[in-house]
Image (cartoon, rainbow, N blue to C red):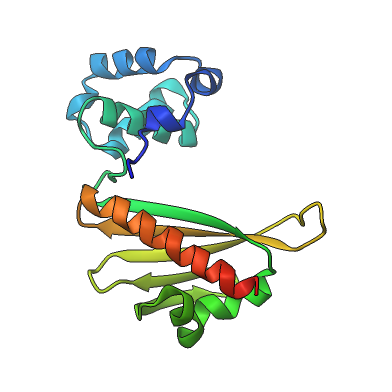
Length: 188
């Protein structure tokens, strides 16, 4: 699985609408300012401070710029580590889902690993560390009921500190498969 670049994720029209400039125009401004020698934080702060770019859009322009100039690859964080994510909509309530996330035995039924629990915020998030030192956060968002009136939640996975780009694809597959197994358990 190939990780999509910032340019593939954020449309040119949306970028121009939100910031007043195209990608090429922003990158030319950043090149002229010497941003290729700056770190991520400095670029984003400069965009916000000098050009009044909203924080979210400053981050997006910065990531796109870094990717376009070979300063980072798609999926790579500014600290050089890699991340993968996945989401799944589940037809259940946060309260019914929660035990499958927080209870070690119930979690093992669908996740099939025994990772160290770092913390929980019931019924919103679970934080774990994997055997390789990577970090995982499971986030629960309650959604509006579907047309059929059934309760829905979105479970998002953020898997950080992966060792390299090769781990991203296999980690995404692991989470897609694991979330499908969880769906089979909670929808049963």
